[in-house]
Length: 78
Image (cartoon, rainbow, N blue to C red; front, side, top):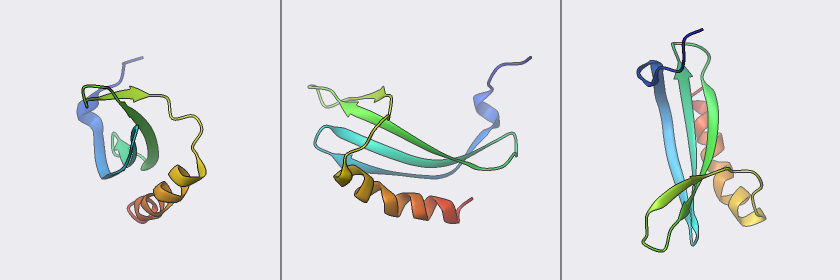
């Protein structure tokens, strides 16, 4: 079975919400022209101001409220 090929992954939508400690990214991707799917990721900000990928896991109420409008926009692109 072949592995993941980044060139087949099309980004249909992408927006982020910034927080003090990092950001949450909302995206819609279609791999190899298949059904578009919603993707949520977290990036934590390092002391130097750069971002590192982190498992999203749970969100605070403030994070969920900030991300919800982006999710609704993303659904329109699916």
